[in-house]
Length: 246
Image 1 (cartoon, rainbow, N blue to C red):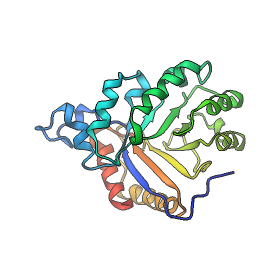
Image 2: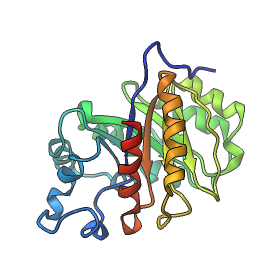
Image 3: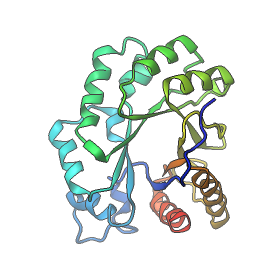
Image 4: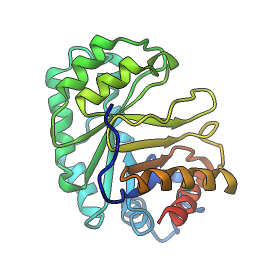
């Protein structure tokens, strides 16, 4: 199985799953920064963000270009794959819809980082379907899969991801435990805690910082995103983790 890094150290990017949260107005966004300026303000503190809007609908090209232009060079967007492909089509019959989605992601240019394909919790393991979809993913992008049924965590699935050059997403969720397995020399971590209202403690953050430091020292690139957005916990935890991992 592949997964060992290169000769040099990897890099760690820490962010949140989304930025367009009205309930961050008083705990992160100052009142003088209006909603159109939230992404630019966010980018002053963190160098990556996961776009959740792309999961629900295909954004207009001008919206994607605005996202691109709002952040500085070196900023990285992770793009959450369309639920039409993952939850409705369940990775099948993907041809033209997949092409349209990836054309949209390409508008982010060199600011486009990994694409996350999150499968529904009710979707049972289907190796043939996974292999066909992963094999159809275009080159030039990094792709990660987040499985939410434990039946997917097995060597046969890891081999499919390995062969397709895709990463296994490492989730942190007490009801949906995953595995810290590398199939490529980079990894994608989603930090859900116990739900959107969970706050990671200082000890939790230190443990994740140590895990990420081990990956980075082995030459593994790490993309880590907090999904506990309620009460501003996600942005708070992301800033704490970023402080520790650099």
